[in-house]
Length: 131
Image (cartoon, rainbow, N blue to C red; front, side):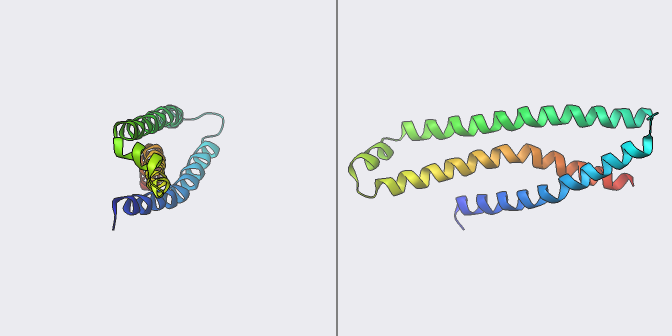
């Protein structure tokens, strides 16, 4: 299986796992908030602080990873003379460029999803083991 197909399959798997983990994490945390009531314990407050801090760090990590993937794709494209010549002079150059752009977009999307996926799946496992 070519690399970009494996990457697409991995991204689809991550999206499915993310779609299952996020509602579970939200449900467990909302239940914990409801059970804590007006006077949460120190562990509850720590969990809520962790929840807020990790959302911010996941956003920045995801943004950074997507920026780096985009930067690397642009660098690869501009440093490869055949890509420029194939687009300019070949009648099939648009296919080569299109495939290259699709791979770059897939890499960027996969890079952005990975940090969020890691945290959500890890939180689901951690919160599941507590109950």
